[in-house]
Amino acid sequence: MTTSFDFHTLSLTIDQTLAEYNRARVPGPLGLHLYEVVQGDRSKILRFRHEHAHFTSFLATGLADLYGVFSDYTLALLYAYVHRQMTGDGAAALTLPLIMPGEEGSPAHGSELRRAWDQVNNLQAFLFGFGTSATVPALVDTGPQDDFWAAHFDLCFSRIVQRFYRLLESLATDAGTAYPGGRALPLITVPQGQRVLSARAVMEAYAITIEVLNTHFRGIRTEYTTYSEPVVRNPGPLYTAAVECLLGAGGRNSSLDEFLAGRAPPDVYYLVVAASFAAMQVPVVQQLDGEVEFGGRPGALSPAHRLHRLAGRLSQGELGPVPAKIRGDREALLTWLRSCHRAWGDEDPIVALSAAHERHQSDPALRDVPAHEKSMIQMAWSTRANFFGDPNDFVLDAGMFSERYPCQVRYVRTRDGKLVALGEAKNIQARYLADHTPVMLQAAVFARHWSSTWEKLPEVPAADRADSLAGSIAWAGCLFGDAARGREWKVPAITLRM
Amino acid sequence: MDDPNVTYAAKSDDELREIIVANYELSQAVVNANPKMAQDAGFELFDRAWAKRYWASVVSQVSGITTPDRLYNWAVGATIGAVAKAITTYYLLPAAAVPAAVALAIVLVRAAKASRKDPAAP
Image (cartoon, rainbow over all chains, first blue to last red; front, side, top):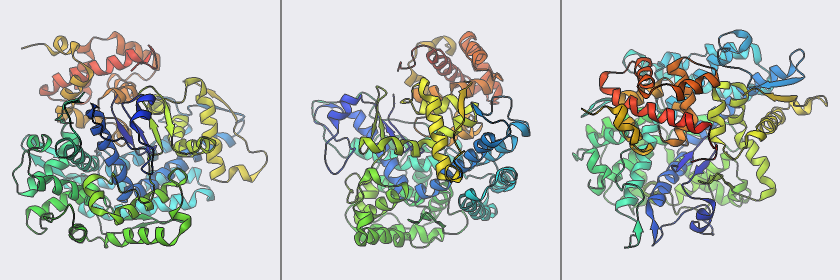
């Protein structure tokens, strides 16, 4: 088992059993952290650092706000389709998954949903994932979404749908900046050939660098320290493309092998960690009332585009190196980050960070919410406030100790299949349902996502899947107001056919 | 030259993963052909968690089989060479990617076999 953070479920999977995890965690204000130990396997701690870096950077940079647009939209899209099956003639029962393999091509079996769904997945692969072969015009064409909503729209979905269309509109202005052949993502040249620079590669550049810094430059090592994995890891070119892009731009001639082995000069690591963090700081803010503001100029929403342009500016000398005192000089770091954002035409990102900090200072209702009671929006605001409180620690050590306002992964999945949830037991079931409904509805609709969904949720035994799906549908029904519309509304009996 | 069909069979999942991820063409082709996988998280590409989630999707894609039982039977009944051939054919891979395709075939077949053993097995 590998350690991994899943932003779809705000969960961390760790390579420890529940008992090992309970021994490793330290009770206190920092919550679900694993600390360096004098004796024992340090590889697991280093992998935790890597994944924790994904968690904090995702929440603090605007990526969580941008992802929220997709999470809400997929929930609306899938529930609208399920709802139609529930209200059609003779829909006294639901047989799930609704769309079996081989059925997806016909309108009677959701061909319009399939096209809309594939476009949404391609957009997510473009903005958060390993990339897509879809062209920019295909990514921003509203046609597939129009076709779906022509048959399924209801006023209860309007706010979420409008927000998604605003996102498409914002991305459509990227069409003028597409790469040759309509390619959505830039290609970079490395010694082995050409590589696609993806959003995930940018996210990995940050987490890999945090891991390498902790492996070679930080932490407690004694004669009792062991490593169950090689100290030098090369996760492959899909993961390292952004690191290579920045190594080529930094002017220090360090190779990828030297970088991964901890043999590059310290300022190279600081450049990669700061530049990749800045590239993830997409100009998107979800306000506490749920509204989302997209800022910046065309191309500003794609971490890959941002990093590519930043590397270009660095190599041309239009952007200076990271400040020499980056580890301790708050103003120097913020000034450098501002210069990155000016290069992209963003508004000053520190304004939103400062606003989050001030809101926490002035609003006890936000400041005093425990981590386990925070909504995703509140978590992103708290993480931004933590960043503003100590930007140097946040950027250079993934906010490991910047926990002024509690903000934690919601769930930890252990090697022995246990689920540890943050918070009080009485509230966990409702929270779990709310957090996992978009994921579960994918299995309810598409047979092709059935097994991958349940592998993601090992805590749900096969015998409980129908109940979990019923709970998710009921939750979505409440969310969209169906449950309040009439006493007759209820989730039909569910039969599984997988 | 050693036949990867033979020499890779004894390799661990981690060793096979290293062979696969080092091949850019294969890795990129798999994620390009699977947008849902390309935006998913909670695994490293081609590791055991990935294989548990996506062996059926990839095997279905390269074999053209969509029925779960037939898919399982094909995956556990075919030779590694046949699965690797289906991978290189479907993803239009160059000859240099064949060893990585063999490694991926072994990962997929192992995951298929494990899927109907003990669900709680690591």
